Length: 125
Image 1 (spheres, rainbow, N blue to C red):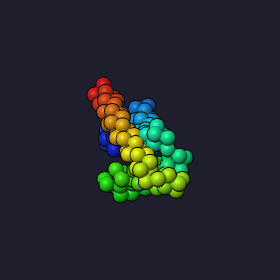
Image 2 (image 1 turned 30 degrees about the vertical axis):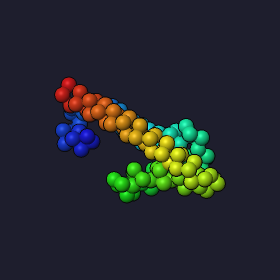
Image 3 (image 1 turned 60 degrees about the horizontal axis):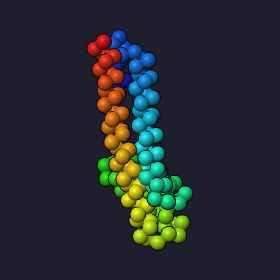
């Protein structure tokens, strides 16, 4: 969108619109991180599992597309195991983390459509 605005000489899409799009982009990253952490926290995850889910999410970004699905689960599972929980509880936390990730994906898709709407309104206005 920034490239399209630049190609158009910033005539249709100005800095205010680009700032709004930037804020929505930052919000999507925050949603991604928080959704996995809140999913883990909902089932009584330890602090290490929550930290692990966040680290797993960030590490998973390096191994797209599989990493983004496996990273939060693996991070929460490892964090729970380090906390001293049994495999069953750690797996439950890992799955809840993954469900939080899926909720985050849905929210991010909504944000992406909102960003497209803001861009097209600015472009065709």
